[in-house]
Length: 260
Image (tube, rainbow, N blue to C red; front, side, top):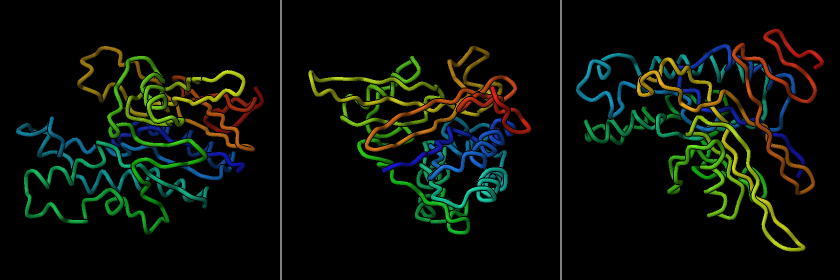
């Protein structure tokens, strides 16, 4: 199996950097991957979160408006440049609306309308809701990171690597907002390598009130997964403060790619 997959990190719209997201969309248009995966937490949905209960934030914002904005500023532009398989993981922020109904209005908790795939109109755009643990390639699993009893670590890549060691498969995840790819090789003679891969985020740190002004040890990045002849090679692409980055010997600027 030979294929290339672009993994879009946590977006957490509307608290995201649209220029960073646009840069990733332009990259997708340029390299024409075989598959695109959004790793989860596409939307923030702060109003129905448990942190907003009893505060002004619970009554501010609109779940439907936030979903529609994300659809218009991410899903539609991706579909304008890419017609291949396009899937989303559901993150812990994405499921906030239905969790809110289940706990605050159980009579409405079974409503299908507030599921991520319906709020974002997946069917209309031929987008797939991925399983919580998606085998994107042989022995390689993508997941958001809030499920599976994954123990959180502070070092970039270490959370995913811990899961990879436990599961015996390479793990590609979001959730931590950190970005790194770390290999772990075992065996004598015939060795085997699994990877822990975290793909970063494009959320604006100034919108993360819970950081209280401190650095979050977050990295602005996205992932590219390469599968060739049974070999798996993950790559983390880091964006700088101007949302520029280097990939494949080219420097990607806001207007396109130049030779590095």
